[in-house]
Figure 1 (spheres, rainbow, N blue to C red):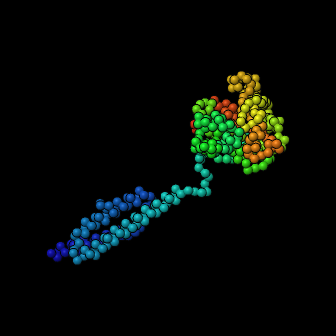
Figure 2 (tube, rainbow, N blue to C red):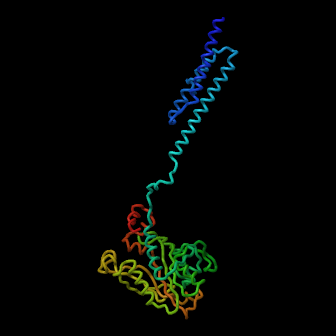
Figure 3 (spheres, rainbow, N blue to C red):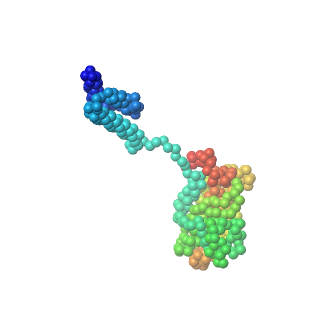
Length: 358
């Protein structure tokens, strides 16, 4: 009996010595990365680890010493767990520092986009007229009939007021001037400026407009316009012609010629369509200009006195001219684009062709 007791005492002493040894080891544990930390966890805390092996030896400890040995084993296990958790936190902090954004480094090579061809041409047109003294004016795309049609001298039964030509938001009012629609031209901006300003007025009105048309290679239900307006005393058709000639030469080249053909618009009288000499063949005739040597680019004319009076301007004292440019039309002519739909399809292959123009 004494021999068995001595054996248990000896085993208990060995367990306590082993606990002290392991306790010294775990307090000085170190690891370089998560892989080494996991190896330490398996070595000390897994089911087949060193601390679990001590629990197996704990069965042979005499009853009167179990409390003391059990407390030391728990202390060892807690110390090992805390140390391994500390190593995990240190490893995570190091990883965060390595992946943190360095604000002192050069930017990442991010692919940059470029301006749309319509934006390029729109800005170019605005720049040309800005240098001639025109200022920018803007207005709502959702407009009323009063500013889109009535003040622009459109007859009550004009086809543009019908559902098949215009997108109406609210229609059927007894007073047609109160109908709400998507503007079909930026002339509505001119009307609003004339209502609130007195001559001299010299503005350009860029913006998007909408018309109920079938989408084809030559037409679309929405497009972009830049309209111009100049009102002052003694403004003549000669002034209009000179401004448009300057514009054409600035945009298409110094050798560009223009011609004005009689036309009709409700808001101008007299009215004209302006053609430019084909910049591809120089006016000699080619497939692009249909062998005429001329290409149509805009409409223009002298502001109708009725429009001036509708907007509160004395037509006996003031005169003016107006013009309207389709941005898609100019871009199509300038870059020889065959299909109008390509401008709104966002085909990256098509858009990349204009990177050099930015």
